[in-house]
Length: 366
Image: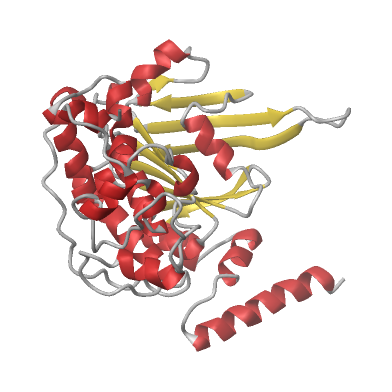
């Protein structure tokens, strides 16, 4: 029996009953149902949202103005979830000289995945962490979430050092952090309903129960614009964009002070990405959490980040404000990343191709 069913004192709702209850929302009627096509997913993710799904703005052009604000549900009063104030006015997150090393196999030397990285994030701010695959982005995110123990350095959350803490001492701090994973299909338990997946952190941390738990789950599903009845459905019955919205609701259910989003839109097509990113920005404005947004896609980071840190081989190459990094980069590696981003403007695209060719010629011109 799931958390919501236990709170209701009712029998477990099966997949077929859940699908019938949510008729017309695009779900399938059995666990073995075939996945819908990408076009159907995109249409399903447009349900109950205002405005049309536009393409993401290119990193080289100015970001397109957002459509009118999508209504979100009134936030639930924090009550026992009240956030602690950072000690001494410290940032919500402060990472200092972080080093992560992994032992080499078969006598090979130690591999340094993260090399002396430092960064800070204030309340309500989004820091974009960008770089190519293997640059150490996700490893830093795991260290921030205390899922990976660093070799050296410091990670302070809300003014408190978290490196080296036992699981018992980490437990209250984990309530203050939410994590959105890259693939919602693997981060949501397929044997649990969406409502039970969202409610699980509340149950584990024994925050609320009964009617308060049901209300909290329903408010969060409203906030991420999932229709009524979604809480009784199973993850496989949702589209990719809907699953990511459910994953976001689960990350926010404890009212975190900081959210770590590890490539949250990379598994979605562009039209669905635009909807999820707009929703993401609106919820952050509503609730004010700090965010470490990890991505290789500069167009996505351009839409959300206040500041950007560029990584290469585990080290910081360049850091600064969004416009400085994406419009006026000073390092060659950053210029290469920016030049590789496709933009809808053909004139700008030709300019970028010429810049890329010039960089290539410089490297191979001898």
